[in-house]
Image (cartoon, rainbow, N blue to C red):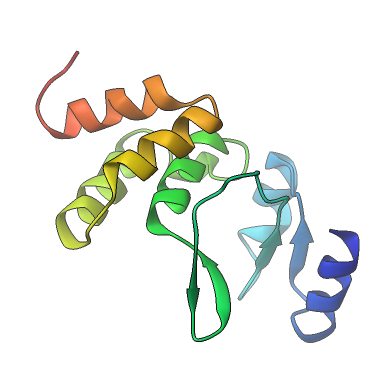
Length: 122
């Protein structure tokens, strides 16, 4: 991962590898066009677009829930807004979403978010 981070930094100087919450607060959020490099979780849902491997929407949504240190500023009500918007505008594969959430040990938390959006406050 270090090699990838250095490679990206050559063309994007605001590249941060596995930033902590204090680093996010003090440097990343103030940076223009910041790039965050993180380890890829095994079995993460990915897709190929024009010969480039990209994360699926399901991966991004689960990562918002799982990576609270990186995405601390998107927690609580803002996260619900993101989920409502994503689920309303795009096709989300719920099986893939829940499978990856289980892989990240966040299935129950994700299910609570989905229930809350659907009006089932279980």
